[in-house]
Amino acid sequence: MPPWIASSATNENTFSTCAKKIKKSGANVLLIQKSILRDAYNELSLHFLAKMNILVVTDVERTDVEFVCRTLGCTPVPHVDSLTPEKLGTAAHVGDVVLPGSGHKVVKFTGVANPGKTSTVLLRGSNQLVLAEANRSIHDAQCVVRSLVKERFVVAGGGAAETEASLRLRELALETTGMDSHCFKAYADALEVIPYTLAENAGLKPIEIVTELRKAHKEGMVGAGIDVKKGSISDMYDENIIQPLLVTTSAIKLATETVCMILKVDDLVVVM
Image 1 (cartoon, rainbow, N blue to C red):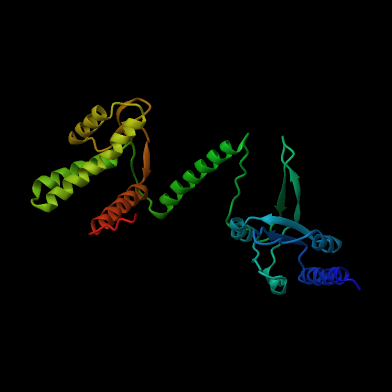
Image 2: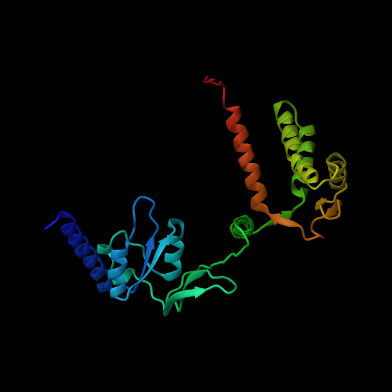
């Protein structure tokens, strides 16, 4: 017997055995993770699975495996020997659905018995640039919600919180002496960079806007911030311009940790 015939027979027996194990577990839909090291499947393996009426969904991204398992209520397995009925999910129907207005197909699961607390947002765009921008916008919105869930407090936006903190630090710097006074003043100057940059990005005159903003806070207008649409100083609470407290505190903590790390550097090694 030629060696290629023997090899082909061995492959057929291996694929047939794997397909029988999958069928024995009770699975009739198989999701295969995309592999970059080797082929996760071939035409012969798909042939045996099709003969046993097993639907195969191929090239599932590795980053999506956990999400899919949580949604369908199943457990990922590294090998067919680990496949048991307890690790399977249940759905009433699985099939291809053609998206309206295009020829693209997606696999749709309906009637999931134990659906996880997940949701899917399907993005469509004319090109990859539009899709990437939409994906970034949704991710930013999710991060805002996540920040509110972790710490349920909001502060005024438009540079109001940073300006108020800067003003209080300047007052504290005048009341103290020595190195602490210089640190408080430097911290206050750093916080004012936020409204300055905001005004600069909005096409306004940053020096005039920051001066007006500082004046408004000194007069007791705690929620005063930069209204980009009006190009002036307004009460952010009245304009409903707010942001999660966690966003502001996290930025300040990370900036402080970075400065402390740099100050601990006592020498530099120049590598030529």
